[in-house]
Image (cartoon, rainbow, N blue to C red; front, side):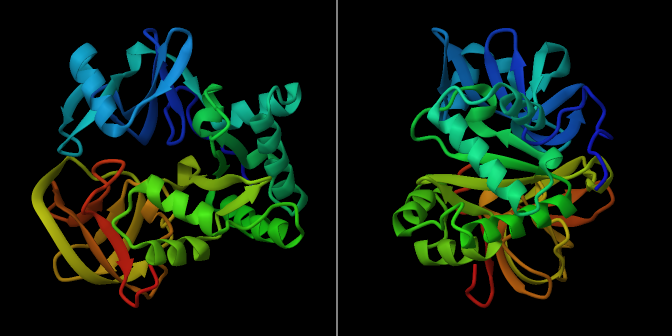
Length: 323
């Protein structure tokens, strides 16, 4: 498999974190750069030497009070977003570098040990070690006993191998399937507009979640540079919309953002910026999507799901009730 080193060294990638000099940590939500600014979401603030995690609403309030210049309208996507000047970034935290460092140095707490066990379980079943990374709170050293493990996989082909390896690791007993309590906790955490039954049915078939010693493991894809679908902005919003459409291409279903090309008389694709709806539909399935109608400069229209992390009132369901 090709190396993902094709990414320029100073270019932010989805799943990376950007750190500023004043102790703010922003999750990168798109590799697109808007007038010298990264498109991000503030997740952590360093306070008293410790990292404090913020909700979407809490992050907006914090920026509004202390750094309003980072909470701005992006003409590229026609939305209010956390825009961080690349000149203000003092460090890019990268999942692949974090996992490599952890492998070399060894675990310093229980969760780091479980993350290494989960990664090794995938590698033992064929996942390429050099294509794995460690994201989320573990990327920043901000984990606690209730934290999950977010394993990042670079490249679509490697991600497919890693998903199959996860299933094999569960069958071999190296990892465990999620039980009812863990599924319900995940559903509550996401705040999805799907019912619990819909959510669990859709998540199970994605084959990207398991447990290691009772701690949840999630697999997330970061595409290689040459696989990325470039944004066609600037976009202009036209209000809320709900559609029903046939999926004609799901190649980018697990990308960030997730993309589904569709057959519809008004829009050409459905895009999701919330991980809940990544991998939600397959080629040939009919989906129902609720979100925002956007139009690019060429007149092409799309539906965007996930204008906030919680995405209230925005969703993707398969029309046959499977997601």
